[in-house]
Length: 56
Image (cartoon, rainbow, N blue to C red; front, side, top):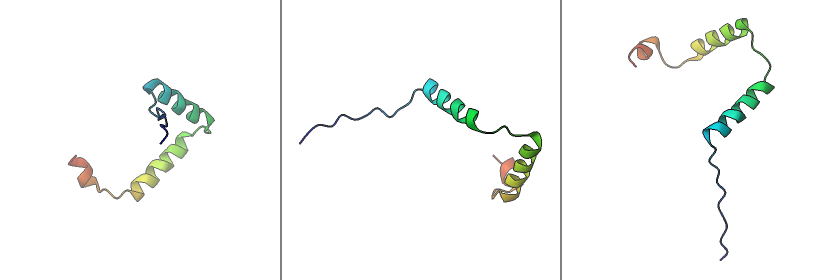
């Protein structure tokens, strides 16, 4: 039975932050109007009612 070294898959906070910034750089910019449309779409599709949100 051979011993296989386990890879350390844990990323440091800094590495994870850098990776996230690189991903965001590749995405096209979002306009304010697009953001408002997304908010309305998310509110419409939300399964949580307003009363439940207030009780958090």
